[in-house]
Image 1 (cartoon, rainbow, N blue to C red):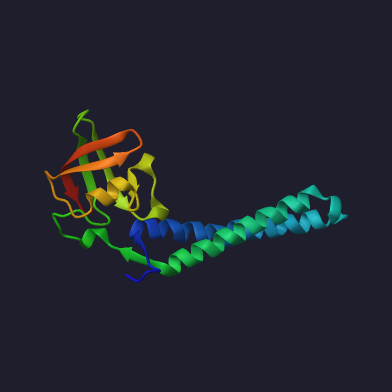
Image 2 (image 1 turned 180 degrees about the vertical axis):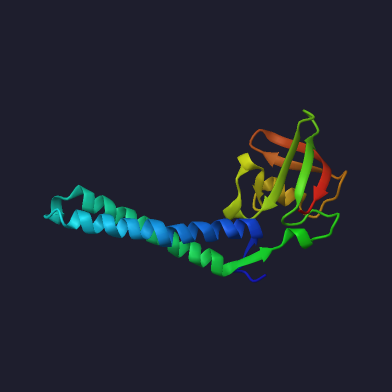
Length: 159
């Protein structure tokens, strides 16, 4: 991977593609129509609808540009092809908190597809960085805002 490549699972790549498609085919035409309608109302200097629509257009165009750049730099990692007993990008991991015995499950993914509530942990997080290269039954320590936390790795899957 080059310095400009962005690691991404196939699922994450597909979600960004869908968002881009929606912005291009639904949101962009809708805002162009809204701008045309607002423009037809007359004096643009005091036309709140026009200024609001132009601001929304700017946000949409910025997001389209950002998505196009990310997708062009994406390095898609097909997790289903990985056969390893070591934690790498894309691994689904189950760990246990050594102090509380609470078990957590998540997949290590790219920053753009991370969603902690859905169990998608960004590769850039301290926990993910501590897990990379480890195996089942290894223990790790992670510096968290509430202090050092210890975890033991219970399972590793690539799916």
